[in-house]
Structure formats: structure tokens, C-alpha cells
Amino acid sequence: MRLINNLRPQKEGGFLGIDLTSAEARPSACLGLDRDLHLIYSGFLNGDSDILKVAGEHGFKLVAIDAPLSLPKGLCCLEESCPCQPRAEGKGRSCERELARQGIPCYFTTKKSIIKAMVYRGIRLKAELEAMGCEVIEVYPYASKVRLLGKNIPAKSKPAGLAFLKQHIGLLLPSIAPYLDGFDHDLCDAAIAAYTAFLHHHGKTELCGETEEGAICLPLVS
Image 1 (cartoon, rainbow, N blue to C red):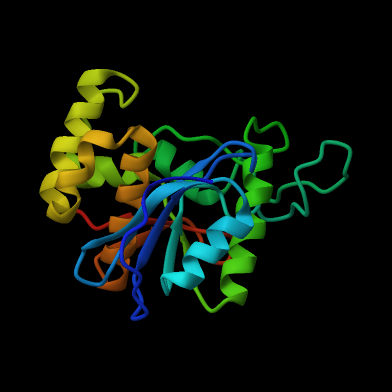
Image 2: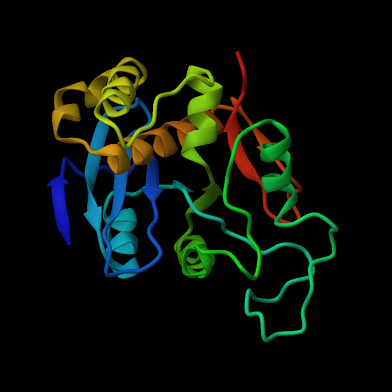
């Protein structure tokens, strides 16, 4: 477990954003905000048990995970050897098809998905967090950034794109500004996820997709 900042604990609820990876061997960026958008946690966590421990110790009640947290209707798994088949004609989930219609690219949850392991991990982690009493929402930081910052967003993998992200995150979340020099694009995405959770708590989001299948939480367009 590799931490950047392990800040003051709090027990009054808050918002945890997770940029989930496919395997526990690869650290997931995690960032937590309190109800007033103060930074209370940031770091990289490997195991699901580490994530659950941080969620419990810091009293996070709303967790936003950047990963598919459900399967398309009709599928019981993503194994090509299984006879289960999706009910919809289009590929993936309805939320993913809707994002595509809006011009927002994303991975589709199918049996040929390259992020199959991440999907399984996300579904499992959601269940474990909910068993602890957390509310869990699915977010897609790129879509959140489009809603918050517009479509002309430079690639986060390039220095100019990362600088762009840090600048705007510093405006959205001033409490994070002193720490941004040490952030990579994964922590930036975790910050956007946590901020989307904050917006959701205050009724400033909408659901993309069908709730019974699994929807993505997006900031409302102002």
C-alpha cells in the first residue's frame, strides 16, 4: 500500500473517489473529501481490503467508483463459454450506449471486454462496501469532466493535459490545490470521482442509463 497523504480522520460521512484498476497488484488511486470539500485522504491502495479499511476508518458514506459495477441485462457473467446472452441488441449496457450517442467514448461491458477483470472487481467491491453501510455509485471521470469542463479537454496522459486537469481541479476543489503538484492523472480522476459523489449527495447529478441495469452518475449541465 503506497500513500501520498493520509490526512485527518473524520466520522461524519464524506465522499471517496476510487480510480479502480483491474488487479489488486496494481495500485488504485483513492481520494476522499469531507462534506465541506476538504481533502481528508489521498493515496494509492492495492488490495480491496485496504480500500475497505480506509472507507471504514474515515467514515466515508458515499463511494464513487470509476469502473463498471454491473452487467448488461441477460448476462450472468462475462465468460464466452457461458450460454448467457444480453437482452439488448446493441453492445454493452444502456448507459454505455447513451454515452456513445452523446459523443463520449467509453469501454463497453461485453464478453469480449478488455477490462473484464475490472468489471468483476468493481461488482465485488461494490457489494463489500454496501455491506459496510456505504452508498456506492458508478462514475466515469472523463464523462464528468466533459460535463464540468466541456469537450475540449487535452489528453490527460500528456503534460499539457495533466496541467489542464490540475488547474481546473484546483478551482473546483481549493483544498486540494496545495497537493496537486504531487498528483498524477489517476489521482486527478479519483478527485473528479469524489467531487461527482459530492454533487450526487446534493442532488446535482443525473443518471445515465437504466437504474435496474446499472447507471452512471453524471454532473448536471449548468
